[in-house]
Amino acid sequence: MAFARIRRFLSASIHEGLDKVEDPVVMVKQFMREMKEEMVKMEQAIDKQERLQFTLNRDKETAEAIVQKRSQQAKAAVDVGEEELAKKALLSKKEAYEQAIRYEQLISKSEEHMMELKQNIEQLQKKYIQLRDKKMELTLRVQAAKANEELKRSIQRHSIRRVDEGFEKIEDQMLEMEWKHKTPSTRSFENEQMIYDAEIEQELKQLKEQKQA
Image 1: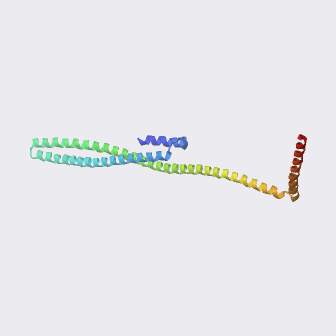
Image 2: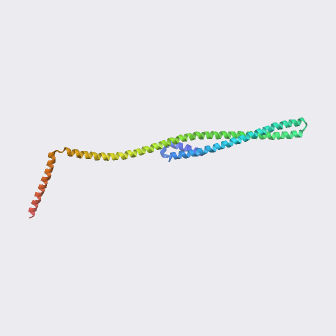
């Protein structure tokens, strides 16, 4: 029955955590469908028992009416000296009485079964409401978990991109600052140094050529 599976699931979700439950929302929906089917079956059984009780009560009333009628007939037969007819009436009365007793017993059993069914369906209805609330809770938790995961991925992507962009911006700013802080004389000296180095290299080359000659 769905009851046992539902209890195991709820126990697992509470004591083991959602990370150990596969597709919790889907599972709860499946259990809810099974419970709905169980409740429909119980409602049909209750309806059947109600019809049976109606029939049994009607037959019991008929048997009791026969008992009353045969009792009157037996008395009337005795009054007119018809003992044989009185015996037949009393025999019919006895059979009708026994039948009424059997109907009473069947009605009592039917009422017990009916009460059990009603208690079960009431319990199922309570469990169904609990399961419906559990489904809503699980749905919200799953949605929150997915949203948090997506948020983490988004933050990670944007953080890495911002760090790269930040480093590039800082590098550009540093180069610009370094260039601005150089004095004209420093820049002129660097240019002169480059020319001077070129002249030295040229003269050194000429000396080497003269030596080889």
